[in-house]
Amino acid sequence: MVRYDGVGLLLMRQWVAVLTLLAVCFIPPNRADAVSSQVIVCVQCHAALNGQLSQPVRLWQDSIHAEHGITCNACHGGDPMDSANAMSPARGYRGVPLPTTIPTICGGCHMGVVKYYMNSAHGRALGRGGPTCVTCHGSHNVIRASLDLISQKNCTPCHTFDKARQIRTAMVKTDGMLQAIDKRIKVLKSQGIVTDTLEKRLFSLRNRSHSLYHSLDVNLIRQESTHIQAELEKSNGDGGVGTGPLIGILAIGGALLSALLFYVIKKQIN
Ligand code: HEC
Ligand code: HEC
Ligand code: HEC
Ligand code: HEC
Ligand code: HEC
Image (cartoon, rainbow, N blue to C red):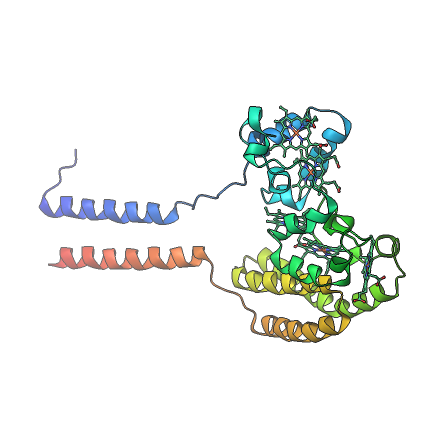
């Protein structure tokens, strides 16, 4: 049997402290999971209905909105937690939105985009033959946007492709640069390098560039694209790779361990 005298007991306590601290340092942080679609009563009930009433669920399930926890009530209103009152106007339910109200609904979250859109030829033609957000993006099957949306099929029902082509051409270079950096991030990640800072910078530049499209203003797009391209070149040049939280935790853990070991050794020597 092991007996602990004064110094031994002290040493043991210090080791327990060291190990506890290390354990705390290495507990992975909780990840906030996206809202499970199972608890949304709109999804539960509509999935079991027929035809037009269940199709939105199937389309929405593969959308970028589902991926980010944006559910039915974001656009239709209502109470997603209370089956009996889900579609009650008193809970904010507003039914199928009229085309003229769609930009305001989507614009509640996509504020930069709706500002450009409202001031554009398309926004000015809202309710008079102009396209709404869902003419180009769809209502339920919304996916990540890209220049592929500017196609003969999407853009020629109402006018010729000439103006659309000009805009596409003005955006192609920036788009290529964004994609190249995206690829580079994937390579860095596969090498275990933390790319948080670079990703954040890319995210905001990407949003700036893609929102700009909705102005339909070729001169403005050319002008702004020059600035965005300069920013992108800067990001690509300096790497923009930040230190991640794991490195931070390792550093703190390491520093605590050395401090405690130093203290223990000093005690023993004394
Ligand atoms: C208990 C089942 C049930 C729940 C829960 C439910 N719905 Fe419905 N929903 C229906 C049925 C049945 C219809 C078709 C009859 C009608 O329009 O009332 C419908 C119709 C709709 C329509 C089309 C209305 C129209 O005028 O064409 C929309 C939009 C809709 N629901 C959205 C929602 C949203 C958003 C939620 C959650 C906040 C929700 N529903 C929750 C059963 C449900
Ligand atoms: C991003 C906004 C958005 C979300 C999220 C959304 N809807 Fe819709 N929904 C619309 C719009 C806009 C329309 C109008 C139809 C149109 O113009 O395409 C619509 C139409 C409908 C209709 C009428 C039938 C049809 O397909 O046109 C039903 C039913 C419906 N939605 C149910 C749902 C349900 C159930 C969910 C959740 C699974 C949902 N919606 C999520 C925007 C949305
Ligand atoms: C409640 C907030 C909310 C509403 C309302 C909303 N969205 Fe979104 N939307 C988001 C979020 C969050 C994302 C994912 C994050 C991102 O990429 O911006 C997203 C992503 C998108 C994307 C992809 C963006 C990209 O980076 O390529 C498009 C396109 C889009 N939404 C269109 C719409 C349309 C059209 C409507 C209306 C019918 C709408 N959204 C309504 C929150 C919303
Ligand atoms: C639902 C009909 C409709 C669709 C679809 C549509 N447009 Fe338009 N567009 C209009 C209307 C209406 C105008 C204003 C009158 C005009 O210039 O013909 C317009 C004008 C324009 C202009 C001129 C802007 C200016 O200030 O002179 C451009 C550029 C344009 N659209 C690009 C596109 C692109 C790109 C697409 C496809 C992604 C597209 N449009 C799809 C209806 C549409
Ligand atoms: C005429 C077609 C058309 C209309 C109308 C339209 N968009 Fe877009 N949208 C596009 C195209 C094309 C892109 C991609 C541009 C690019 O790749 O640079 C895009 C990109 C986006 C993005 C991604 C931008 C980002 O921040 O990453 C969002 C979000 C979006 N649109 C939302 C909307 C909303 C909300 C409306 C209505 C207010 C709307 N769009 C109207 C064609 C359209």
